[in-house]
Length: 205
Image (cartoon, rainbow, N blue to C red; front, side, top):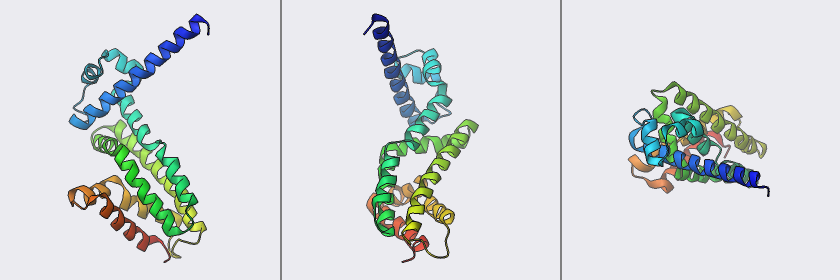
């Protein structure tokens, strides 16, 4: 490899490593202190970089929040869950696969979901990011629910869009955390209860 290409590769590797470290620091500090209370300077200090680097590499606080939202909503778990739901043969099996997928996503990104949701209450940019996240969430659900419909699993009186809304209402993070954490049910009981509620509302048996 020519020397100038090696130098560029090293620079790109350093930039990506720096960016990951800044994102890690932002995730930690946003979670600990909240988005509005966290400064670019504190993120830079935690990541051992300059504030200018936070802006240049990551787009400042807004860019970092968007990156975190993307980590949550474009996780490799999402296509994996969709594929598992598609492979399941019955409507109930598809719903069970989806429910397990929610638990996996919440284990991986629950802190990010809370960061973005709380930030949306006071920051227009965060509100816009949450809207994008909700749209991505519901688009994935439409694909899964269409599969349930195609195996004859949807109740006669409910449309794909209505079923998406029912699942979104029951399984969004706030509802899951309320049952699993605040009620003290734990993830297994909360998942089972939510799945039963959704099944009774949208499935034909």
